[in-house]
View 1 (tube, rainbow, N blue to C red):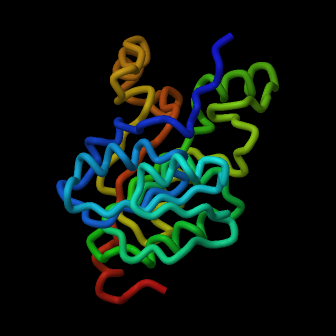
View 2 (view 1 turned 180 degrees about the vertical axis):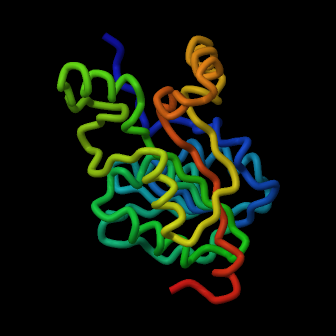
Length: 223
């Protein structure tokens, strides 16, 4: 049996196609030990100042080595002063929160007007979750993955877009892990093509979106 991935020590390099050309202040929420932040610091060297926020106090010494400002915060209770980041990462964190809508709106309200936010959320409609539920009535929590036992919220494509748009963001790009990523099964792509894309949500394990504050909100301000 394979061990679950160590999320605290993953580099999320698959977000590269969604990254802006430049970034000067980066906020990484739920950053683990900060290896993705460290990767971004090299990518945007020497201009980027990296702020890492996580809830696990045990990783603070390692996190402090990889970011410029390290904070241990329970995001359900709020977050520290973060300045005005022009790049924000919310990678596999919102589904762990009691009220992700409120947290996302607070983060967006602090962003630079033309900043980019990248959000990744697991897809509960993924076939390996949906099929056992539909056919066998099985919905068993696990140590990792879509049915991670620490997940408090579940998302589909529609509810993911609703969450993002509810924070007055416009989606600017999307990666569907399971279809668009390098490791996607050829059979998934073939079946999806043969059905005219009707199965795309069933073969998507995770949605990764880039978004920016809508032009209307830049003019009116965010409340």
